[in-house]
Amino acid sequence: MDTARRDTTDQLIATYRELNIKVRPLPETELAKKGADGSVHDIVDRMRADELKFAQALKERLTGVPSADVQGENAPIIGTETDEDTTLLLISQFGTARATTLSMIQGVSDQDWSAPFEDNSSLADRIQSLAANDALQLERIRTMLGIANTTNVSGPVS
Image (cartoon, rainbow, N blue to C red):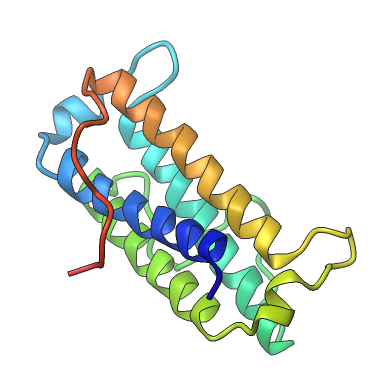
């Protein structure tokens, strides 16, 4: 695995680790507090939905097996999502979907990693875009919570 691919994979892992280290321990009241840009809960909810969709699309791309047709943008992906889901549950569901993504990309050959899709982007491009979006969302969360990016969240998942 080349360095860029490893770095991107490490970023994907670090996102979940940071959510666990910096967000999970906080009280739900703080995470659900609405500000001008919504709440931490809202951001994690969107991250969960995006990751679930990404993992499903990746599975379809790698296996060629389409998923069941989901009716509408707001239809549940797991089937158990509710408006009452706590941030803790959202982080857990995000982590499950992220683990699926990581598991699937681990077995991708270098050729498939860089092969273009219909829109001329590659799997590498899409994974890098996912990691970049993670960084943006984590920065929004840090800003909302008034925390600095000081925790070392890199390294292997334990």
